[in-house]
Length: 124
Image (tube, rainbow, N blue to C red; front, side, top):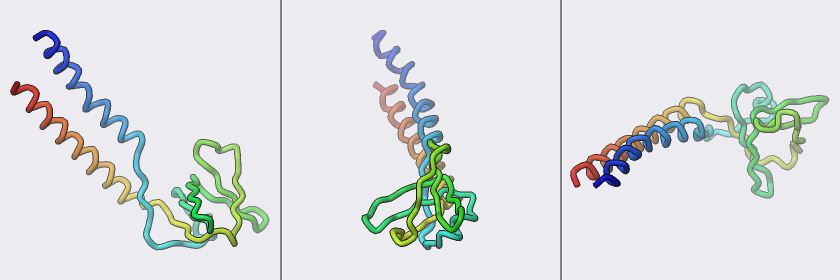
């Protein structure tokens, strides 16, 4: 019986850990309509670039210097990644509103699921 109480006590902490993990991880939803590299340069949002070889690169932002384009990744701000304009197929901007709504819905769904599971466990 003591193990059940310990389990219930630890189970209450689980939702908090999961919510914090999801909120800090975050999901990014991108606009459906593609944009040009020049439009991406002026943007303050993340940019998803798909190349001809179906490789997807996500950049924190894109810069243009001397007619050449460079992607800056969030985790490597000191490194620049050259972007060849002729290799790019699709460029999409992060949709901030949809990303936020997606995070809220997924967190809410997780909370409801955890509450229902806790209710079933506490009934036993």
